[in-house]
Amino acid sequence: MAKVAKLPKKKCCVSKTRCGRCPIRMLKEGTLPEGYTVKKRKLVKTGAGKKSGRKKAA
Image 1: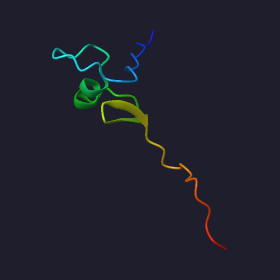
Image 2 (image 1 turned 135 degrees about the vertical axis):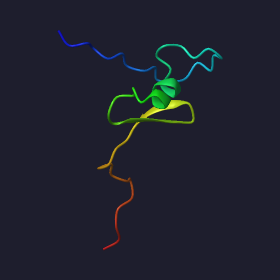
Image 3 (image 1 turned 90 degrees about the vertical axis):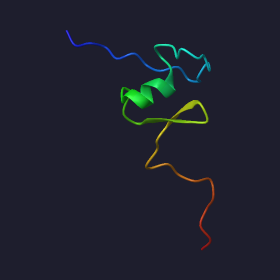
Image 4 (image 1 turned 90 degrees about the horizontal axis):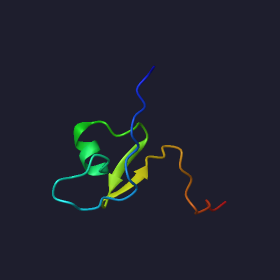
C-alpha cells in the first residue's frame, strides 16, 4: 500500500515546537503538497490559471 500524505492545517498555530501538520514546517521541509504555498501563516492554493475579478475594457 502507498503511504497517504498528511494534509497541512489551514492556519499555523504559532507554537514554538511546530506541530506535525504545521504548514510552515512542511514548506521548509519540502513536504507541502503540490499546488499549495504559505502566505501570512495561512495555507493557500497556487492558482496559475486564476481569473481576476476585473474585466478588460473593450
